[in-house]
Amino acid sequence: MESKNQTYGLTAEHPVMVTDVATSYSYLDGLVALDSNVNYRRIKSMFSSSVNGVLDKYEIVLKDEHYSFLFIYPYAMENDFTIAETFEALSN
Image 1 (tube, rainbow, N blue to C red):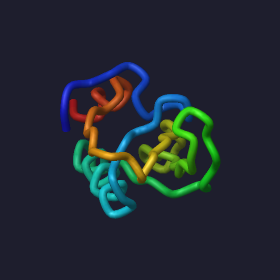
Image 2 (cartoon, rainbow, N blue to C red; image 1 turned 60 degrees about the vertical axis):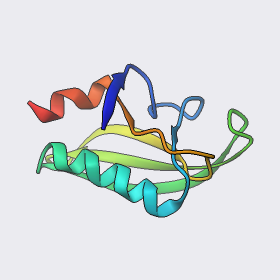
Image 3 (tube, one colour; image 1 turned 135 degrees about the horizontal axis):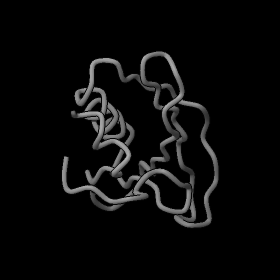
């Protein structure tokens, strides 16, 4: 994963941008690789005017407790594997 960004993916207004659903899971699996206690689950799909399309909302879980929500837009023109600063602590 690339350099960190403070809010990337943490809001519907600034979702993670990937080119397809399979790449969404690759991105999520990259977060899981940071810490073996991390898991995720898809919450829902939702419309966002920020991308004029449908986003997927995921819950990130750390040690069976809510850690964060993550928003992914799986219809972007290119992949952006930037991660939010909040996930940086997971690799420590």
